[in-house]
Amino acid sequence: MTHIPVKDTLRIALVGDYNHDVVAHQAIPLAIDDAAAVLEITADYDWLATSEIRSSDDLVGYDAIWVVPASPYKNPQGAFIAIQYARENAIPFLGTCGGFQHAIIEYARHVMGVSDAAHQETDSTGRMVIVPLSCSLVEQVAEIELRPNTLIARAYGQEKISEGYHCNYGISPEFAAELEKSDMRVTGWDEDGEIRAVELTNHPFFVATLFQHERNALAGRPVPLVQAMLKAAKD
Image 1 (cartoon, one colour):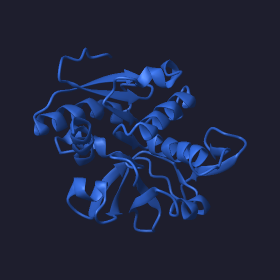
Image 2: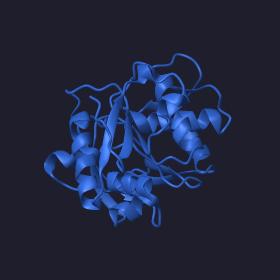
Image 3: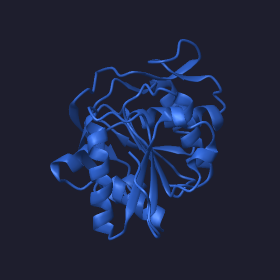
Protein backbone atom coordinates (compact mmCIF):
# COMPACT_ATOMS: atom_id res chain seq x y z
CA MET A 1 0.00 0.00 0.00
CA THR A 2 2.12 2.88 -1.28
CA HIS A 3 0.80 6.34 -1.99
CA ILE A 4 2.80 8.47 -4.46
CA PRO A 5 3.53 11.86 -2.92
CA VAL A 6 3.22 15.09 -4.85
CA LYS A 7 5.05 18.35 -4.41
CA ASP A 8 4.49 20.02 -1.03
CA THR A 9 3.10 16.81 0.42
CA LEU A 10 4.19 15.62 3.84
CA ARG A 11 5.53 12.08 3.71
CA ILE A 12 4.72 9.86 6.69
CA ALA A 13 6.41 6.51 7.26
CA LEU A 14 4.12 3.98 8.93
CA VAL A 15 6.51 1.40 10.34
CA GLY A 16 4.90 -1.94 11.09
CA ASP A 17 3.61 -5.09 9.45
CA TYR A 18 0.31 -4.11 7.81
CA ASN A 19 -2.64 -6.35 8.54
CA HIS A 20 -6.13 -5.27 7.49
CA ASP A 21 -7.63 -7.25 10.36
CA VAL A 22 -5.87 -5.05 12.92
CA VAL A 23 -8.32 -2.36 14.03
CA ALA A 24 -5.58 0.24 14.53
CA HIS A 25 -4.31 -0.34 11.00
CA GLN A 26 -7.80 0.34 9.66
CA ALA A 27 -7.92 3.56 11.67
CA ILE A 28 -4.50 5.02 10.89
CA PRO A 29 -5.14 6.18 7.28
CA LEU A 30 -8.40 7.82 8.41
CA ALA A 31 -6.61 9.53 11.30
CA ILE A 32 -3.96 10.93 8.97
CA ASP A 33 -6.48 12.06 6.36
CA ASP A 34 -8.71 13.70 8.98
CA ALA A 35 -5.80 15.47 10.66
CA ALA A 36 -4.47 16.73 7.33
CA ALA A 37 -7.91 18.08 6.43
CA VAL A 38 -8.16 19.96 9.72
CA LEU A 39 -4.71 21.47 9.18
CA GLU A 40 -5.47 22.15 5.49
CA ILE A 41 -2.35 20.33 4.33
CA THR A 42 -1.64 17.29 2.18
CA ALA A 43 -0.18 14.26 3.93
CA ASP A 44 0.74 11.01 2.26
CA TYR A 45 1.91 7.79 3.85
CA ASP A 46 3.82 4.62 3.09
CA TRP A 47 3.44 1.39 5.03
CA LEU A 48 6.96 0.13 5.65
CA ALA A 49 7.11 -3.50 6.76
CA THR A 50 9.71 -4.01 9.48
CA SER A 51 11.36 -6.64 7.30
CA GLU A 52 12.01 -3.96 4.66
CA ILE A 53 13.96 -1.67 7.00
CA ARG A 54 17.60 -2.64 7.09
CA SER A 55 19.27 0.73 7.68
CA SER A 56 18.44 4.36 8.29
CA ASP A 57 18.73 4.93 4.53
CA ASP A 58 15.29 3.35 4.22
CA LEU A 59 13.81 6.27 6.23
CA VAL A 60 15.47 9.16 4.41
CA GLY A 61 12.99 11.65 2.96
CA TYR A 62 10.15 11.10 5.41
CA ASP A 63 8.80 14.09 7.31
CA ALA A 64 7.45 12.02 10.22
CA ILE A 65 7.69 8.44 11.45
CA TRP A 66 4.93 6.50 13.17
CA VAL A 67 5.74 3.07 14.61
CA VAL A 68 2.33 1.46 14.65
CA PRO A 69 0.62 -1.26 16.74
CA ALA A 70 0.49 -5.03 16.13
CA SER A 71 3.68 -6.42 17.59
CA PRO A 72 5.56 -8.72 17.84
CA TYR A 73 7.01 -7.30 14.65
CA LYS A 74 8.43 -9.65 12.02
CA ASN A 75 11.74 -7.78 12.28
CA PRO A 76 11.97 -5.86 15.58
CA GLN A 77 15.31 -4.41 14.49
CA GLY A 78 13.50 -2.57 11.69
CA ALA A 79 11.34 -0.83 14.28
CA PHE A 80 14.38 0.01 16.42
CA ILE A 81 16.18 1.50 13.40
CA ALA A 82 13.18 3.73 12.64
CA ILE A 83 12.86 4.89 16.25
CA GLN A 84 16.56 5.66 16.59
CA TYR A 85 16.60 7.51 13.27
CA ALA A 86 13.65 9.70 14.29
CA ARG A 87 15.10 10.34 17.73
CA GLU A 88 18.59 11.28 16.54
CA ASN A 89 17.48 13.40 13.58
CA ALA A 90 14.70 15.45 15.23
CA ILE A 91 12.06 13.90 12.98
CA PRO A 92 8.53 14.02 14.42
CA PHE A 93 7.79 10.61 15.90
CA LEU A 94 4.68 8.86 17.13
CA GLY A 95 4.63 5.40 18.67
CA THR A 96 1.46 3.60 19.69
CA CYS A 97 1.12 0.33 21.61
CA GLY A 98 3.97 -1.80 20.19
CA GLY A 99 5.59 1.43 19.01
CA PHE A 100 5.52 2.70 22.60
CA GLN A 101 7.09 -0.49 23.92
CA HIS A 102 9.86 -0.51 21.33
CA ALA A 103 10.58 3.21 21.81
CA ILE A 104 11.22 2.50 25.49
CA ILE A 105 13.58 -0.37 24.67
CA GLU A 106 15.47 1.65 22.04
CA TYR A 107 15.95 4.54 24.45
CA ALA A 108 17.05 2.22 27.26
CA ARG A 109 19.62 0.57 25.02
CA HIS A 110 21.10 3.57 23.25
CA VAL A 111 20.68 6.42 25.73
CA MET A 112 20.37 4.98 29.22
CA GLY A 113 23.10 2.39 28.83
CA VAL A 114 20.88 -0.65 29.35
CA SER A 115 22.39 -2.50 26.40
CA ASP A 116 20.46 -5.69 27.10
CA ALA A 117 17.05 -4.02 27.50
CA ALA A 118 14.48 -6.58 26.43
CA HIS A 119 10.77 -7.32 25.84
CA GLN A 120 9.38 -10.22 27.82
CA GLU A 121 6.97 -11.18 25.05
CA THR A 122 9.76 -11.96 22.59
CA ASP A 123 13.09 -12.12 24.44
CA SER A 124 14.39 -14.92 26.65
CA THR A 125 17.46 -13.10 27.98
CA GLY A 126 18.37 -9.56 29.03
CA ARG A 127 16.86 -7.02 31.36
CA MET A 128 13.11 -7.03 30.88
CA VAL A 129 12.06 -3.38 30.70
CA ILE A 130 8.77 -4.34 29.01
CA VAL A 131 6.80 -6.89 31.05
CA PRO A 132 3.23 -8.24 31.27
CA LEU A 133 0.72 -5.73 32.61
CA SER A 134 -0.79 -6.44 36.01
CA CYS A 135 -4.17 -6.46 34.22
CA SER A 136 -4.70 -7.04 30.50
CA LEU A 137 -5.77 -4.01 28.50
CA VAL A 138 -6.99 -5.92 25.45
CA GLU A 139 -10.05 -4.07 24.13
CA GLN A 140 -10.28 -1.95 27.28
CA VAL A 141 -11.03 1.75 27.66
CA ALA A 142 -9.56 3.65 30.60
CA GLU A 143 -8.86 7.14 31.87
CA ILE A 144 -5.40 8.69 31.60
CA GLU A 145 -4.09 11.69 33.51
CA LEU A 146 -1.73 13.88 31.49
CA ARG A 147 1.18 15.90 32.81
CA PRO A 148 0.41 19.63 32.34
CA ASN A 149 2.34 21.74 29.83
CA THR A 150 3.53 18.80 27.75
CA LEU A 151 3.19 18.01 24.05
CA ILE A 152 0.44 15.50 24.71
CA ALA A 153 -1.52 17.72 27.12
CA ARG A 154 -1.34 20.64 24.70
CA ALA A 155 -2.48 18.41 21.83
CA TYR A 156 -5.55 17.25 23.75
CA GLY A 157 -6.20 20.62 25.38
CA GLN A 158 -7.01 18.91 28.67
CA GLU A 159 -5.34 16.91 31.41
CA LYS A 160 -7.72 13.96 31.71
CA ILE A 161 -8.65 11.79 28.75
CA SER A 162 -10.21 8.39 28.09
CA GLU A 163 -8.71 6.12 25.42
CA GLY A 164 -8.82 2.53 24.18
CA TYR A 165 -6.17 -0.15 24.39
CA HIS A 166 -5.29 -3.51 22.87
CA CYS A 167 -2.22 -4.69 24.77
CA ASN A 168 -0.83 -6.98 27.45
CA TYR A 169 2.60 -5.42 28.03
CA GLY A 170 3.92 -2.23 29.59
CA ILE A 171 6.93 -0.72 31.37
CA SER A 172 8.51 -2.64 34.24
CA PRO A 173 7.85 -0.84 37.55
CA GLU A 174 11.55 -1.05 38.42
CA PHE A 175 12.58 0.50 35.13
CA ALA A 176 9.85 3.15 35.39
CA ALA A 177 11.64 4.68 38.38
CA GLU A 178 14.85 5.01 36.34
CA LEU A 179 13.02 6.46 33.36
CA GLU A 180 11.80 9.39 35.44
CA LYS A 181 15.43 10.53 35.82
CA SER A 182 15.97 10.69 32.06
CA ASP A 183 14.92 12.99 29.22
CA MET A 184 12.23 10.44 28.31
CA ARG A 185 9.59 12.12 30.41
CA VAL A 186 6.54 10.28 31.67
CA THR A 187 3.55 12.34 30.56
CA GLY A 188 0.55 10.07 31.11
CA TRP A 189 -0.58 7.69 33.87
CA ASP A 190 -3.58 5.49 34.54
CA GLU A 191 -5.55 5.72 37.78
CA ASP A 192 -3.08 3.34 39.46
CA GLY A 193 -0.09 5.48 38.49
CA GLU A 194 1.16 3.10 35.77
CA ILE A 195 2.84 4.74 32.76
CA ARG A 196 0.68 5.16 29.68
CA ALA A 197 2.50 7.92 27.74
CA VAL A 198 6.01 9.34 27.39
CA GLU A 199 7.74 12.06 25.39
CA LEU A 200 11.29 13.27 24.88
CA THR A 201 12.05 16.66 26.35
CA ASN A 202 15.04 17.23 24.05
CA HIS A 203 13.21 16.55 20.78
CA PRO A 204 10.76 18.73 18.78
CA PHE A 205 8.07 16.02 18.77
CA PHE A 206 8.63 12.51 20.09
CA VAL A 207 5.53 11.05 21.73
CA ALA A 208 4.64 7.45 22.48
CA THR A 209 1.47 6.05 24.05
CA LEU A 210 0.45 2.59 25.17
CA PHE A 211 -3.13 3.42 24.19
CA GLN A 212 -4.33 3.46 20.59
CA HIS A 213 -5.74 6.96 20.17
CA GLU A 214 -5.87 6.48 16.39
CA ARG A 215 -8.98 4.30 16.83
CA ASN A 216 -11.03 7.46 17.39
CA ALA A 217 -10.89 8.09 13.65
CA LEU A 218 -13.09 5.03 13.03
CA ALA A 219 -15.85 6.76 14.98
CA GLY A 220 -15.30 10.09 13.24
CA ARG A 221 -13.68 11.66 16.29
CA PRO A 222 -10.56 13.87 16.14
CA VAL A 223 -7.15 12.33 16.82
CA PRO A 224 -5.24 15.18 18.49
CA LEU A 225 -1.81 13.54 18.56
CA VAL A 226 -1.88 12.83 14.84
CA GLN A 227 -2.77 16.46 14.22
CA ALA A 228 0.12 17.48 16.48
CA MET A 229 2.53 15.18 14.66
CA LEU A 230 1.57 16.52 11.25
CA LYS A 231 1.79 20.10 12.48
CA ALA A 232 5.28 19.40 13.82
CA ALA A 233 6.25 17.85 10.48
CA LYS A 234 4.87 20.84 8.61
CA ASP A 235 6.64 23.35 10.86
